[in-house]
Image (cartoon, rainbow, N blue to C red; front, side):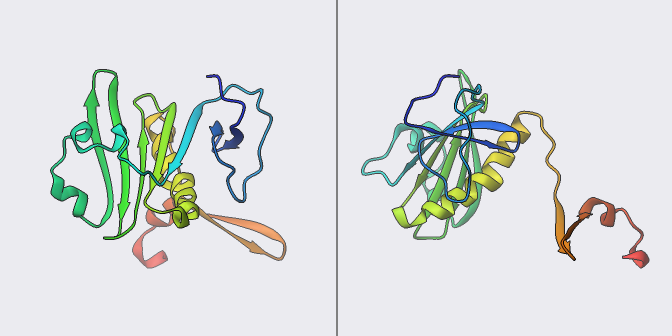
Length: 165
């Protein structure tokens, strides 16, 4: 996939990403690599983009008023689109993934939510994208002890008998 010259390139979770905004805390990489995912961080909009239109998603209007974290899908001729939405009753963060996982669009209700949007993108949005691509994502914990890292596989704890936990 080709990228625009004004995009920033990152490598994250083994994916080469092209993003239209500089992300805090991440280091850019060489842009000559083949891009796996183009991410369009659109942010706050004056008008409703077609990707966010209620008719595109065919969901009841009352769903837009529900607070919490939601995952919606819509089926189109080119495949299934995914919408990840976080709404607290006032502010909203939304990400749309295209059917083959090659493009992601991010929207939020006010500019002050940019860092929250980046956290959502780097966590569950890219995690969901990896799942759509058939990559198994594991959750584990790591702590530093005397300058060394110790990893803890949470799955191993789940499989232990109750008295050993």
